[in-house]
Length: 234
Image 1 (tube, rainbow, N blue to C red):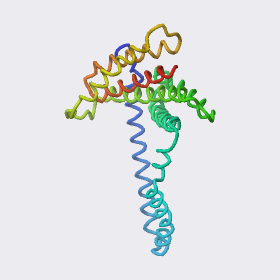
Image 2: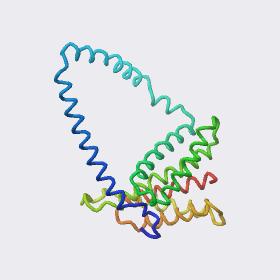
Image 3: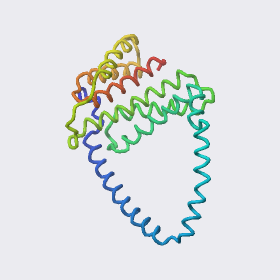
Image 4: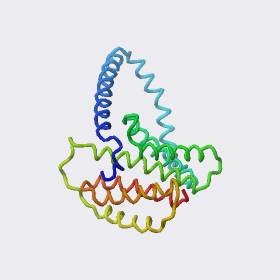
């Protein structure tokens, strides 16, 4: 992509991903064979006892679900807790992509992930983390996550589905809406803020230019994450 911004090791990702998939498939086949042999040796009474032991857990899970369970807690948790959970989700997705990269590649992606992790740890260590600090962490880690996914989309040459996207109206609207938000951030920033704002503009331009709607969306989401962090005061 332009200016190398999304060149976070596409070729390396593709090669490493193939190796990881092959290794996982082989491991799964061995585990499946072992499990099958083990199941064949089980005594019917033992199998019945194990099934009965599992039953109370199922009833408890069903009971929790009927009374709201995790959904109830999530709805009534502070906004900062929800955003911190989202940040944790993006952190792990970005780290997964980084794990496929060569040590000396993925500069922008690694920088966003590392900076986001620093902010995330700070929020976790503070019992009353400010909403803006949580949002800064969320924005950077969201950007890292989607930048990594953009690299994966850009790297794929084989297995590209030859189908049309059902609609790009939402994507086009989101592209239009992000520009005034970036403009409102203004200029005159220094240090990391200046760098992130420049990256956001480049990602937005690349999102406009991308022919693949999925790639365009990932670039847009990455730019939106940077915009969120900058709006929160980073």
